[in-house]
Image 1 (cartoon, one colour):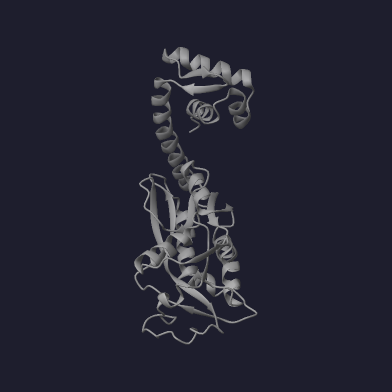
Image 2 (spheres, rainbow, N blue to C red):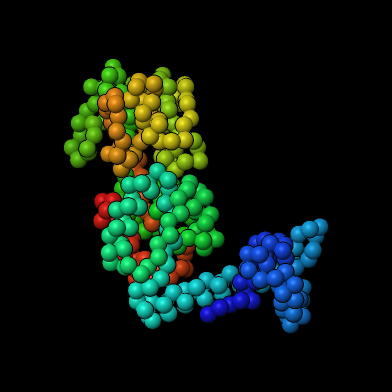
Length: 302
């Protein structure tokens, strides 16, 4: 199912330019202009108005675009189902993975997945979770592995595992031996108020882990006096290891960090957990190999 008409109009709407849309579609500018003009003549309405240097959808154009997106989704689902029926083993899977998770997840899952599906092309997109979410909305990736922060109505969520937020302090810290062991947890609990006057080395606000740190600080009514922002989570932990403040990490990250100066990890709020999920766009058909990819991921991360 080709759906060239819808593809052309959507490209033009996104690019707002005949030249840019033609380049994306790999056709000539005159050919695209003629195609859109003929389409408008057939429909009997203008789909785009030229405002300055931009092509802006008319009201009829907006309605066309709204329907075209639905048609493209149905067409994509049909093509994937047809491919499943026809071959059962050939296809492409585009997966978004946050940079911090990628080194520990991608090698393990690709090795196992490729053994079972050698003819499925897997394309890995690394980046920040927010940017990857935008790619998912645009249908530029099929799956996104991420920490679930908020529920978006456009997405479906498949639980993979539950992670734990940990406070990281140097082993030489005066409070390092003040933790209390709690049955069922891998790390001792400690009262975060004991550290409220220290330097908190935190990620930036647009990073998903900061969402959970904020929940903990709000739950415990703690407002750090001094904060330093570092984007790399491991750098935050390494700074804590040398006694330069305290930081947070996730249990799934902590097992991969290596320190010259030993650290201690603590649970500070047993009400805040981090759900790692696979996200995909609502209404998208997931072929059998995509479901198997998710199953293998769950086995690896649990």
